[in-house]
Length: 226
Image (cartoon, rainbow, N blue to C red; front, side, top):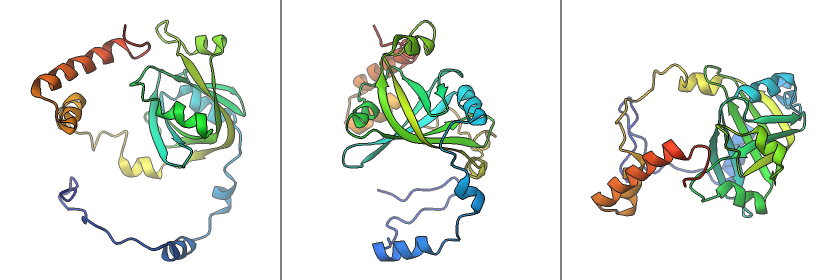
C-alpha cells in the first residue's frame, strides 16, 4: 500500500516502529497526572445540561464490542429530539433501517457494554456517555421516536454508568464546523462505485449499485425499502 499523503503534501511513514508492552506502560505512566476537575467531571448521570444537549443533538457515534472485545463504531443520525433522555440514568436511541449487518445489535447480544459521543453542529464541546444497553420494542417509546410517521423497529436503551461533558480541543483541531477542511463534491467516487472497486464489480454492476444507493437514500431513511 502506498504512503498516505496529507493535504499538506507530507507522506506518513509506511511502517512505524511500535513500543513493546513494557515501554508502552512506561510511556503512559510518564504523562502528567490528571487534573482534579477532569478526574471528577464524570458525574455518572445525565444532568439538565447534558440532557438538553442530547435532546438537541442530531448525531451520535455508538461504540460496542463483540464477545472477544473487538470493537465497532457506528454513526446514528436523527432529527433533534429523537434521542430520548428518559431519566438521569437512562437514555434511548432508535435503530433505523440500515444495511442489515446489525453489528451494533449483534454485539449487544453478547456484550452489553456501550459508549456514545453526542455532537451538536456548531458546538465544539461534546457529551460522552457509557453504560450497558438492552433492546426495547415498547410501543410508546418507539412511537415517540417516529419520523415522518415511521417508527423504528426497536430502540437501544442505555443504563448510564458514565456521563460527562468533553472539552472542545478535538473539534477545534479538526475545524469540523468551520468548513475549512471541507472537500469539494466529487473528490471521491460514489460509495457504490468505491465498494464496487473493492469487490471487483463490472461497470454495469457499479452503475446499478449507484442507482440502488440513490433510491435507498430517498426511500429508506426512516423505513425499510418496499
